[in-house]
Length: 130
Image 1 (tube, rainbow, N blue to C red):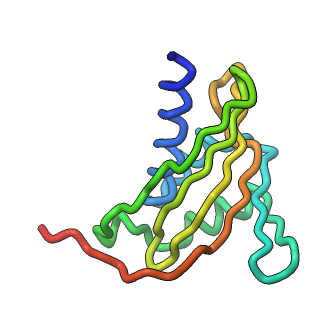
Image 2 (cartoon, helix red, strand yellow):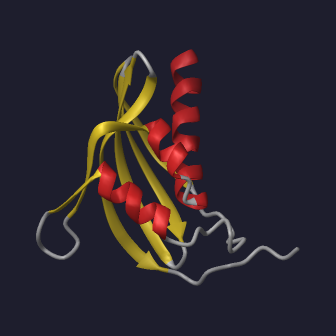
Image 3 (cartoon, rainbow, N blue to C red):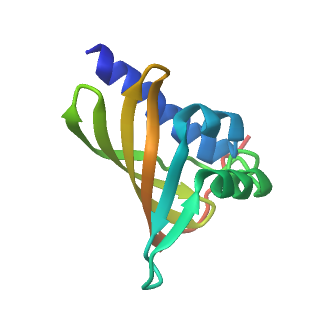
């Protein structure tokens, strides 16, 4: 049960990092040697975590725009007590992504060691009313 709780916290940290464009949270949840992959345009695109971090830091956050959050955990596939693949759907601005995050638990907790993402669709942005 503790593994589920700890992995859930790491997933929440990741989702918060994307929603708020919070690179400190990215640093907390991504392994420093991790990379991100995408093949949406017919070729494999590889983005080292340092490059992804700089990109996230430079963009406006959905949270700053008060965008309605659309986070969904689709699947958690436990490979062992210390490794899991998590499939998520989330919306950042008009982009709806599906992410496969490979997590491994080490001495410093659960870390994403790789991410494969896919731009699933575009959707209207809903803003929370004050």
